[in-house]
Image: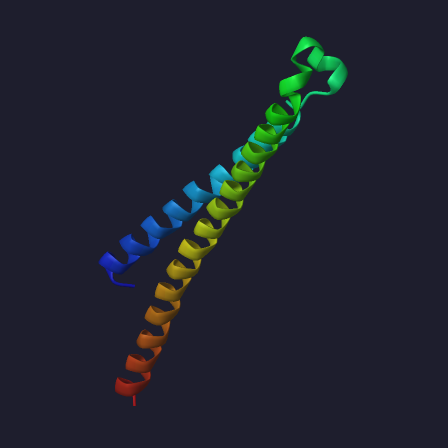
Length: 102
């Protein structure tokens, strides 16, 4: 594999790992936000705003979960790009080798 292509593939793998490493913490954050919702008894004198608060908790949790999914999708896409580069290089090498090794 050419040095510049190897560096590109290595950088893509690093970026993929970076995005993948963000997915689990985001999922954990979403679970933490889920636990912040309150019930009528816990709300006490703030029961009037409880529904709005819980709705915001649900919205934030949903957005963070979506972010976790998007981070994983980004990681997977970058990883597929790196694999495509490697496969293309391997295929090109094989074609060239078979052409000139007769």
